[in-house]
Image 1 (tube, one colour):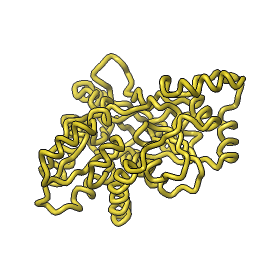
Image 2: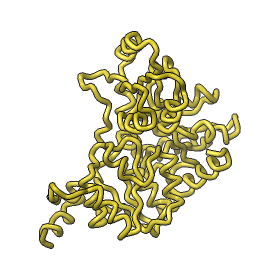
Image 3: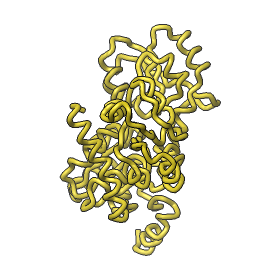
Amino acid sequence: MNNETLDTAKANVEKRGFLDIDLDPTMDLFAAIERLKKEKNAVVLAHYYQEPDIQDVADYIGDSLGLAQQAEQTTADMIVFAGVHFMAETAKILNPSKKVVIPDLKAGCSLSDSCPPTLFKKFKELHPDHKVVSYINCSAGIKALSDVICTSSNAKIIVESFPEDQPIIFAPDKNLGAYINKVTGRNMLLWNGACMVHEIFSLEKITKLKVRHPNAKLIAHPECEDPILRIADFIGSTTGLLKYSQTDPSTEFIVATETGILHQMMKASPDKTFIPAPPNNSCACNDCPHMKLNSLEKLYLCMEYETPEINMEEALRLAAKRPIDRMLEISKAAGL
């Protein structure tokens, strides 16, 4: 590849989202990525919803809480974040001196997009006595407007760290917020946002599936809508679902979350059966289109050429870091 081709690809990154460069189809990408990790002192952090090849090459695979904790603790010079944009942003917020790259800048998040900072700022101003707890699936702009961040792993503990009489705004996920209201007895004010993947599950189809598989347990992420959560045998974060599938004696599970987690479930429990919960459309899958924008090829390219890179203004970074630090402190004290 000549320099002109590379320069053109770099110039188009903002528009395309990734380095649009053809690779030799015979290249061993797994070996090349391992080589780049050593050469650049790079760490690959991947979310459970990434494609199996990316999960298999990652140094750490986890949910949002685990990934934030790993990003805070890493000694690598470069963080390669195989996830969506807000996750890479969180890594940069916690590591301003490290280079943070992402395979595809267009890997956004429908939930994050449902809560624009300008609108949320006006909403917050209408309720000046409220503290703001924001789910980590949001932009740096929303984090900067928050008092503390939470994940699905620690949301209950974070909310309960406030006095019972303290009014709280919960953003951006109305389904997770409603679930936390239910389990804590709080009455938080909920921003009207949701994840496109977790709102797509069909109660009717899941009910029929449970009839066909009477011994299967339905395990669901709390971003799912209430009718799904009401019939679930277990509700938990992505890591919580994975652990439950390993420790519960059941041999069949209907899994109501993004299909990427099934790879780890099947690896950990090859003798068990995992069935993706059916959506309310004609597709047989529940893939997050944003997560699945990343590929092994894009992962290699972003490591080799260290772009697309995540950057942000220092004032925004510092404002967003404060509530993340608070979350990590509360989680650590709770043993999470």
